[in-house]
Length: 362
Length: 164
Image (cartoon, rainbow over all chains, first blue to last red; front, side, top):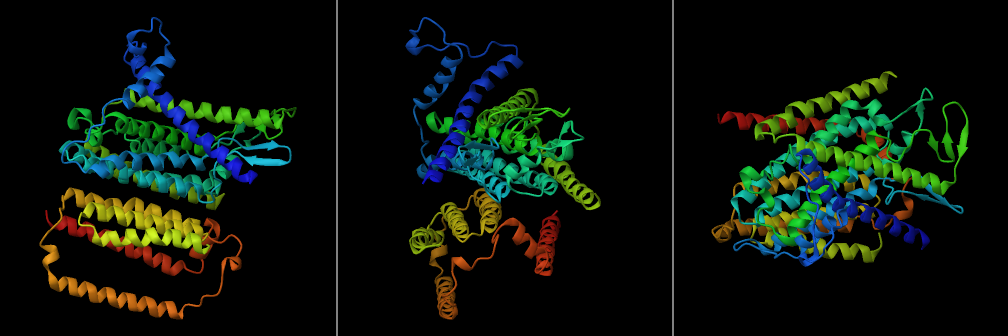
């Protein structure tokens, strides 16, 4: 019974963390784009135009979602009503459940109970994540088809072709990581990055798999369909692609899906290549300095520091992705396919071969 | 897997599988097939075959069915009224289906009903155990299957190149 309560709380924590971060990223993106373009950006919002003072962050943070959710929900004539409504939900569910396999801390020891800080400890963790990511295509395809709009259909078809193409490079880049750490369980992978090379350098995945990191990040951004890979949206060609015919809450859902995908890519990059919740020199019982002395810390504090470190790393990569989104221009369609099939896929294969060779020889 | 779980999953599974062939709209048919594969994956989960469940979703629900849907949308296949008028095809489908059902019943009578959840070996269905079997006892069938897939890929490329 108590185990059930604990896993419920952990799952709820992960869900709320992802949803809150998704809402926050909407604001970060607006402000971030403004900074990059030398504007001030969204800085005021008042209730019924009456509020005399400006609440800054809180105001814009709340105003955007409220505005989106109170707008008219329009279904175009000739559209498939059922699928038009279902598409945003089908897009949202797989990305929301993906994060349960990602660990956000080591263990929290309360009394004699050890709580693994991960919502679901799956033996097939990485495969589960790939499975959920592969289901994300349906929302895009169905939204494009159900809208009864040519631009939307084109966007949906582009989206499915792009996501399937980059899934292959994404999956292959992970094989190198799996070979290095010898596990598909993300918590095991995060723990394996805890030891130190030569007593000083933390053994994070990026040191073993730099090429896989670059391939994974590129393919991950392509999976989340953001600039420079935003051909399914391509506002200058397709109005706004597969969600052209969406308004109000449904459109807000598609925006949320985009941001949650950014968070997932950040969470996976953090866990696989940057030590997950690891802080260098911080072990389960305290800080082990490289010169030998040990600073003992209580378990709760250690767990809190780890969760904090994980959150900071995830936020950094979210910020990086938003910076990339507002820096680069969009690829042309043939360039997109060329990058996926002719550059990333062979590179990923070479990475698998090299990793296997090194493991065999060492 | 207890009986309640089995039937709670079996009912939607049969309904959705029937809808694949009964629904007039090909897009809905394809979606029902996705749901069928998804529920099958849940069955694998309850049978402790986690890896098979994950692969089922990645390969079938996530990749193959997306391509099905892609083709249906690209060709803009609509419901074809002439299709249902072909009586001969209906007869052939009925006979084929009947033979399949008869085979199923024959198999059902031969399958032993003993053996349960308790007899599972240690680590059943985990990646380590499954891949160990795959790369030792079943290495040859595994490699032959991959060669078969490669042949299919090469064949597809040859067919696509021929038109230009």
